[in-house]
Amino acid sequence: MIQKQQSMTFSPYLELYNLVVPKDNMLRQINELVDFSFVYEELKERYCLDNGRNAIDPIRMFKYLLLKAIFELSDNDIVERSKYDMSFKYFLDMAPEDPVIDASSLTKFRTLRLKDSNLLDMLVGKTVEIALEKGIIKSKAIIVDATHTKARYNQKSPREILLDRSRKLRRAVYKADESLKAKFPVKNTSNVLEDEIDYCQKLIAVLEAEGGICELPKIKEPLNFLKETVADDLQQLRISEDQDAKVGHKSADSSFFGYKTHLAMTEERIITAAIVTTGEKNDGKQLQLLIEKSKATGMEIKSVIGDTAYSEKDNIVYAKTNNIELIAKLNPLITQGARKKEDEFQFNKDAGMYVCKAGHMATQKARTGKKGVNDNQKNTYYFNIEVCKRCPFKEGCYTEGAKSKTYSVSIKSSEHTEHIAFQESEYFKEKAKERYKIEAKNSELKHRHGYDVASSSGLVGMELQGAMTIFTVNLKRILKLMK
Image 1 (cartoon, helix red, strand yellow):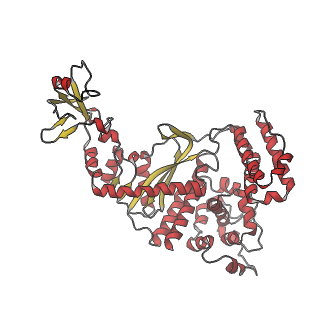
Image 2 (spheres, one colour):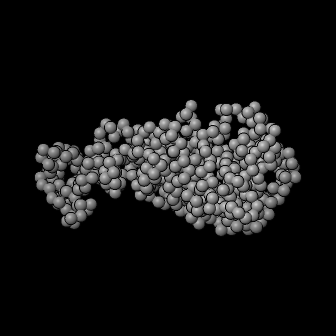
Image 3 (cartoon, rainbow, N blue to C red):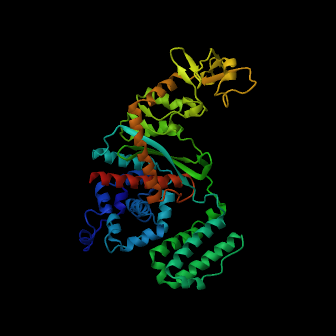
């Protein structure tokens, strides 16, 4: 067993933790809440159990990555803080006097041990399991949405990335000591990548020679990010872009370059499923898999709440087949067509005809379009052309000289007809109000845990970032609800 590779912690100083890490400390609470032994089971196939040196305990390595997700720090900064922060050492199951790992070990752990593991589903499932055990999840509804994450390289040239990071570092330094400006190397003005790298290395050397100022957190963190970019990501910079990332659209006139994370969340704000895709993927196509993944965690699902992206016909049929209420409005093109509200005619159900804004009723109707293809067929209503010629509302409605005036309505499927009636009910409207909760969760992921920008390149790296971030926010939510 991998556990045997870890020696037990014996230290005369362990009692310090009871003095300096209070019971309400978040890291202490997470340690008491979660049995991390599941990490051994997940990673046992990636360790050699009878050859070579003893490995660093995989739980400890996993916890280092969890600390990165909680506090949004670089590898170097998380290791450095672990030297003196007693809550970190307690969380990592270290004795107060124990040495920390080398920061490069985290890169190896991510790329060698976590590669190809089904970490995202496993960690989400673990937190839902805890929430169900604690009786936190009581609802039988999930809310669905997608949040976008910009690619780390975001279609910038390698030089632009270095320029951006060195600029942030200089700004941080100027706020602390503007006199250092005179010691900085002359800014690079060429478009050659190697010249920009050379400038960044000189800038780093000047700051490290200053010593004390580099220990200020506001300077140390951007400095470490720049050092990581120059030293560790040089090869990736030469590639110049994230090969997996794709262009997606947030609206008709705004786009992003990166990834989407499709989420399902309970009304208690516990994420129950996540799917990471490239940025161009359609939200609605992920709904059925989100439901199946949520069920696999032990959730019972009676309702699904989402926006219009999830109300496509296949999803309506799936929901009905599985006895699930789909609280998602149909696209307005289905319910009212391409017309503006003020251009719509009213339907007289007794006469079975449409009535125009002036109160004139259609004289006849006919079905048009290809037979047997409901999606392409329409009911076309014909109005008396002589009346239209004299109508006070003819401007914008009747074209002068036209030989006919018609009003066409697409024939809706039975599924769409039923859903239209459902979305007009008070129950639907009340349930739909819960959707704001997932918008708030997306904001938390981005603004508190750095999920607005990918921390590495590639879909695998994005899934790892998603796994650790969602695991973190779910644990924090569980702790809050337990209080």
